[in-house]
Length: 264
Image 1 (tube, rainbow, N blue to C red):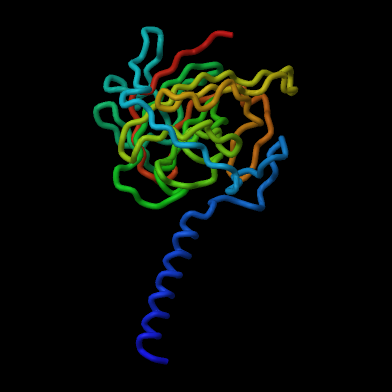
Image 2: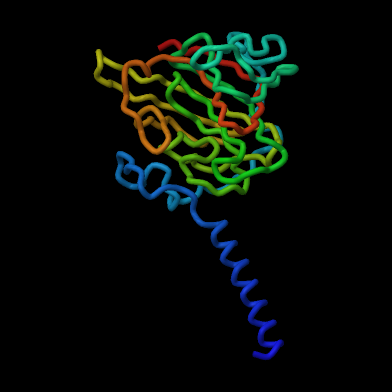
């Protein structure tokens, strides 16, 4: 084979390899062996589910100081005094000036809650490391059982029901309102706890979520407590519980967390 031909073939192989790598990088990230969700449309963590459209939030949208009747759970004056480690033991997260960073274990509030209005501000790392679920992964749990996902979802394809602001494993957000890595973001959540008559579910848990001031879930019911690769069944234990912040071995910062209990 002539050297020019060999060179052309080698160049073509490099281009083809780069194209294959690009396709692989853009391929859906998810599962094909998980259970179907109750409506029969998608599997849990289905990578072929449509990705939510990205919508840029306003520059200061979503940030809010605690109202007079709120309980501040994380701030300069309280630090992490309202929290404990799930499963026991001291909280090992670093905290400085009211900003806490994930580290060595999921934490939960010492108090338990039912219906709440919750405000949470968070920031994923400025330096991007990893991809999909390995990039700025954490989560906010309501009643200890229902997760609103925290993730760096800025130009980061993953399974849609696991991206930032998703009702984890169940519903993607209506749009992707993520800010770039390192920037502070906010969730405003209104949560209605499930209702039971004895062991019988009367009303599922319902949530409304704003991500950086943009509505991403509107009075949407949970199919059950959230979990990886499955949807857990409802039990009366999910009617009330702690607010949890997940440690997923990714550095994520939190600040300005407050809650208002809503009386039925």
